[in-house]
Image (cartoon, rainbow, N blue to C red; front, side):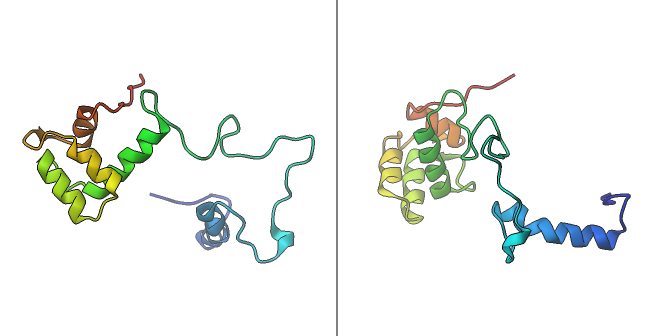
Length: 136
């Protein structure tokens, strides 16, 4: 059960959450008045970042390149979750029906049309692409 803070009442908790809601979801300032924006870091101070030692763009798992992550994401978006398990031929037809990019359709045509693939990872590795290495 979410009780909010114990310093304020529920009404003030909701008001405070509403005030910062746009900032947390937009990732940028949403204030109309410039004076409400937080001050930037000083010249001798590091930039403020959610991930100070990295970047906010996103990470790439070990065992797969950033280009492969992007392409696999496009393949997943073109196929959807409902198609699995499916043969290579069914995957090509689904991608074409969903108006997938030519690059995605051509990639899926390299799959064996008669072989059954259990999920995206199975099809992806069958194409010879990289797979994430599990971390323990």
